[in-house]
Image 1 (cartoon, rainbow, N blue to C red):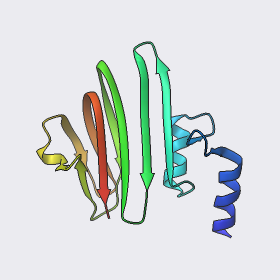
Image 2 (cartoon, rainbow, N blue to C red; image 1 turned 90 degrees about the vertical axis):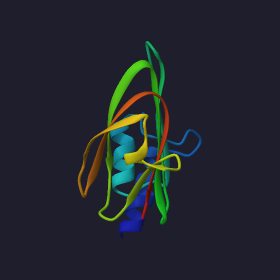
Image 3 (cartoon, one colour; image 1 turned 135 degrees about the vertical axis):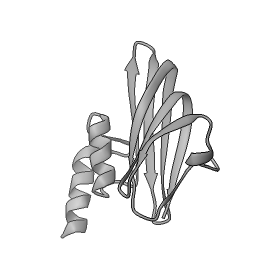
Length: 125
């Protein structure tokens, strides 16, 4: 039943051509990740400073998030996390990264402050 529901949801809301869920909002993309309704999603919004991007891919081994933070801006990113997962930015543990500040890490989330740039985070299960 759950698989049938996920498939029906994906047919109604997921566009495989663009990789976006519904209108492409971060809320819609987060819903798809949280409920396992899609394996990967691309999210973007045009702002007065440029294109803001937030993408993710989920597999049995890992979950990967990619973000583009525009020049002269910063962002607070809160990532969902499962207990026991290791979080890296690129090939480096986040605790070793000089490009971000850790706000908080709990068993269920990681809050990170990001400066402008491109980031790739991976949770290894």
